[in-house]
Length: 583
Ligand SMILES: [Zn+2]
Image (tube, rainbow, N blue to C red; front, side, top):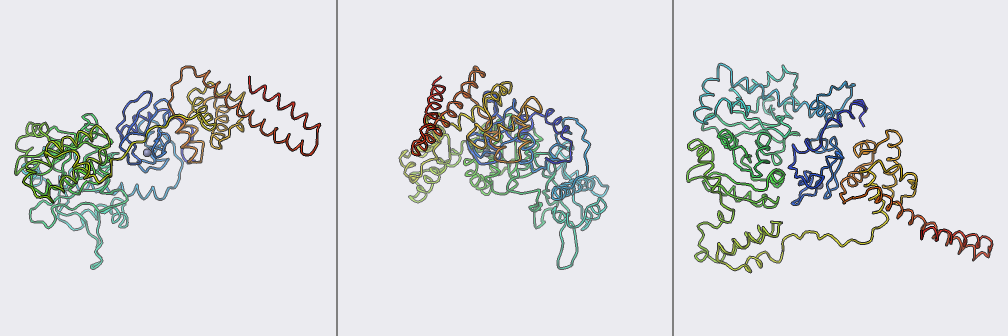
C-alpha cells in the first residue's frame, strides 16, 4: 500500500491493535450481539447503522457504505495518511518501526501546522511563567477566575505577552517559517506596513484540541477589561474548522460517554470551572450558535444534552438557537437555568459542585423551559400560532415515535391546547418515516453468492470444501467473483483469510466496501458446514440450469439446421443434466 513500512510490520501492528478500542475513542459503541454498533461518524443519522466487528477487526456502515479495517478508519476519520496511521498505532502497541524515507507533501504541510500549534502552546506557557508576568497573571487566574494551579496546568493555559513579535521571534528559532505561521493563524501580515506580527497579544491563551489530543487552535481572552474584543480566536485553518469542534471534548468525552449525558456551556472558562468543581461531562460551544456538525458529534457520545447558558436573555436566546440542531441529531434536550443574574461560572464560584448538582438535578425539559410563564389564553393569536408551529416543527424532528408522542402530549397539556392543533400546524409534513424491512423474496443468485462468501469469511476452514466444488467463474456477480478469487489466492499463500488482509490486497474501493459489507452480515448460523453445503448446492443448481438453457438453445439451432445427429446428442445431454439437477 505504501512501500515505506515493511508489510510484516503492518501485519504486526494490525494484530496488536484492537479496532473496538481505537474506534471507541471516537464513537460511542454499544454491544449488540457479536458486534458493536454506533451512530455513523461519516454520515448524519439518528439510528445506528455503523457496525464494528471485534472478531473480524473491521467496521462497516450500512447507511453510507463506508467500511474497512482499523487503518482505513483512522485515515478517513482523522485524515491521517496510511504511514502515519501505522506509525501511530505502532507507537501505542510499543512496536518499533524501521521506516524508509518517503515523501508525502501535503501530509508534511499538515504536520508543520500541528508543529506550529505545539510550539505556540509552549511559548504561551513559558510566557505565563516568565518573571515579568507570572505573579499578576496567576493572581488574576486564582482570584478572578478561581482557577487552581492544577486546572491551569491541566488545561494548559498560557499567556500572550505585550510584545508585537515575541512569538514570531521564538517560532523562527524553532524551524518555523512565515508562510506556515500565517497559515497556522498565529502570525498576521500587515499589507499596509508590510510587517509581520503576532495575532495574539495580552491575552490568556486557551489551547483547543482535537480528539487525538493535539492542539489545533487557540482561544485568547483579553486580560484587561475595555479591550475591544473580549475574545480573539484562531481563524479557520486546515487543522481547525470552528463549526466542527467543541471545546473540551477531548478531556471530557469519557465522562460524557459514561453518564450518557452532556452539559453544554458557552465559554471556555465555564467549562474549566465546572470541570474543576468535579462536573466533568461538559463541552463548550465557544459562543457560536450550535452547528449541526457539533450536534452530531455530541450524539455520538450521549443521548441527552443539557443546555447550561447564562440566565440573561442573550444566553437564553442562544439556548433556543441551539435546540434545532440538537433535536435534529436525535438528542433529547434539557435546560439547566442558573439563578437570575448568574452564569455557570459565577454559580460555580459561589456554590461549587453542590450548587451545580442542584441545577443539574432540577433541569427542565425543553418544553417546560419554552412554555414557562406563558399564559396561552392571554397571548395574541399570532404569538399563539407561532409557538404552536415552533413546537410542532420541533416534534417532527424527533425520530423516535414514542418520544415524539410524549413530546406532543406534554406540549398540548402544558398549553391546554388540543393535540389536533399541533398536528395541523405541522402542515401535513409528518415526521420522517422509518424504512420498514421488506418481506423476504426468494433469494436471488447474487444473494446466495454473497451469503456463501460471508459464511466462508466467518468459517474459513470450509473454504477448501467450497473450492473443490465451485470455480470462481461460477460466480455470476462480478464483484463476488473477484472477491472469491482473491480469497483463493490468500488461502493458497497464507492458509487463512481475514477481511483485513483482503481489504489491504484489493485496490478497488468498491470491492473493499463489499468485503466489509460481507463481514458485517450477521445471520444466525447453527451448522456452518451444512449451511455452506446448501449454498454451494444451490449455486450448482443454478449453474446446471444455465448449462441446460444453453444446450436447449443449441438444440433449437441444430433442429433448424436439420442436423439430427447433433440434435440427438444434445437431447441426451439435456436429459442427463436435468437428472443431475433433480438430485
Ligand atoms: Zn455511514
